[in-house]
Image 1 (tube, rainbow, N blue to C red):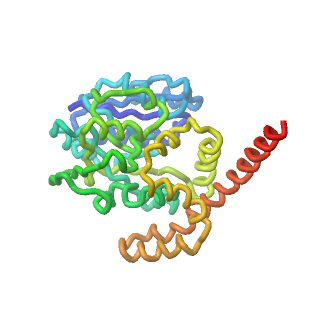
Image 2: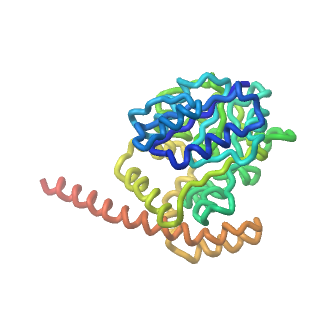
Image 3: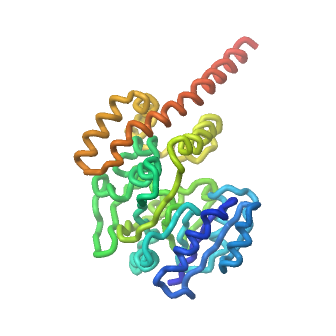
Length: 328
């Protein structure tokens, strides 16, 4: 099977060479590997590097990654499409061989790798790779990371190289397509995909197809440079979601189960309580023998404070606007 890697970029000359080199180093027939770089009008030489490296380059006038993925789907010529970011690196040279293995099953329409960190990564990056961001970790629990799916879902079938879980449509897992998730090129693409990197996998479940987890396909995700960088990265997202009800998260929220909706309302208070996250971290660090649990109170508090810093002024401005309308 031919595999097309789709990478959305914007001024990524510093990080792109490393991910491209990790693809070129794969023990997989080179003529069956394509790299499509969908670039958001970079100004640092990203496009020149990509062309010199033998990549297909597509312009992305909207600059955002999600619309870029859709452009990449259209430009790719592979049987399978592997969507990654410039902060990813294929951890071992057998990544492609492992991620394509589940597609011998005609009902498997997506394969999800295991996201890992390395010793060069900071604690914020390690936490996100082990669990996801604090809000979604609290919201989805064991359904937020591939390594803990077995606690949340029934196993439909298991092979030597991959596992297929029974993901109910009303309670799907949190799997972002841009972290090495690989899909069949012929899968349907509908309106809304260009704004959301989770919706495509929900659509696969809606069509009664399977999503396989491939624990041996390892991909690195060097996502943030530290705690302050994490807050600066996620803070604007909080503001966008507060102010714009057309953000993809609100469309997903309409399908949340009752317990997930309750957790979404509880997290802002949980995150800054300190005691509750510390207790959860202690219990789970012992159970899982995973040191990143000890960072749970720290990263929750940081993001929780940022949430309230942005939410309180917004709530006050909404209240004032309502008062003005009532008096008018």
